[in-house]
Length: 270
Image (cartoon, rainbow, N blue to C red; front, side):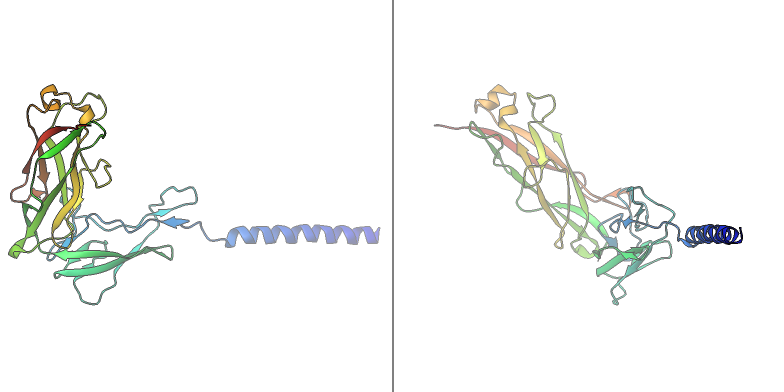
């Protein structure tokens, strides 16, 4: 009996010890953090010297970093940090993560959350954008081939944004839309549309270091045109492209800017 009682006490003690270890593991475990974080989320591609970065509606907005759990769901309560890496004092962050432009140039910014750092992003600090102008090449006739191909000799859209002191401004988003188009035989596919160089529909472009937005095209799908006189090469029709750009919620001078593109169908001879 004495041996059995001693064995029973050892077994009970063992169970108690295991229970204590299990409870200790649960109590000492850290709360779940971020499994991943987003890229640095900028409300704008640029910031104006003497102003705070603004969103597409012209409102002052912070730079953010979003954390995600293992299911890919956002965890908004996890704090993050933002930093300007340059020492040239061209811009700075406030404690609320607003990016303020101090002088014209370029800055490198980065974010961090849960001990994980985002990729760095280059942000131009620019003069205030004021004016939208036509760029090069200027609008020209689109010669739409009939037969053997779907798309035309598409024409490049080019605009320039200038700022205070007649400087060019980088990072301004220019939006394009067709204010006058041609009829399509398809209920879902337009005969005329704005695209990138690969033909993918895309209606906005961003100015480069020279203040130029020139990576969009006006394209025609000839087989979808419904105007028989145009298809027979008996007349030239016109497409109008409207370009717009704004800052701080106000349209730039000359915005909207209308660009005129005559369309002439060229009948292929085989």
